[in-house]
Picture (cartoon, rainbow, N blue to C red):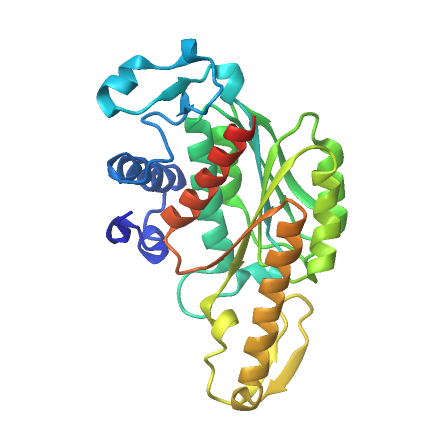
Length: 297
């Protein structure tokens, strides 16, 4: 796929209408996907999937075969509809920004695009926001896209972060199996993250994790000595960046690799993005995972 057409999050930040932003990204993504050489997706991925050996040939879409010379299966609405829930972390640490947009704004844009894309696929969509508790709850529904976008548009940074308590409450609220996408900076140990998400996984939900960090949190490019503030607790610590940079980077690497390994071993998809990553890339990762799930079903 050509990355030249991907949209920069800082450019998108100039669009003050969240629905327009989501539509711009999703439409551009879909048009680019249809033009690309990537063969894993159909002409209309909301209604078709690639043919697999053993499929009922009566459901092959021969019109699509005539246009593409490839076999795709017709998928009826009952086969493809799902409940899609964004679980969005709005804790204080998500407010951080080193230069570009904040983690919270990036997460807001990502959630809007994922929801818009899911609704295009005729999924029921909803959202849950949380800090140490659940804050906003919009149940998944075919009619809730506008409410989800309005919730994202008006949300503000919350209190200190938590994960286990709000995820447990969210799992108890879900009445049907869903695809739950967690969007968070994950300032928790890999073991805590896995334990928390097991509440969702053990109830039959598919869980996808988008780990959002600022580029400075990954690279620690600071030069001058100063006091660094913990956004969750307000604690200030004097730091000489040059003396801790290597150790810091190693700890961040170990943390992200530990998350990827532990979650992956337990059937939870994990993707790491910094806030400069084009949103189209996140959509591609998500849609790739959806394609894999549809083949399993």
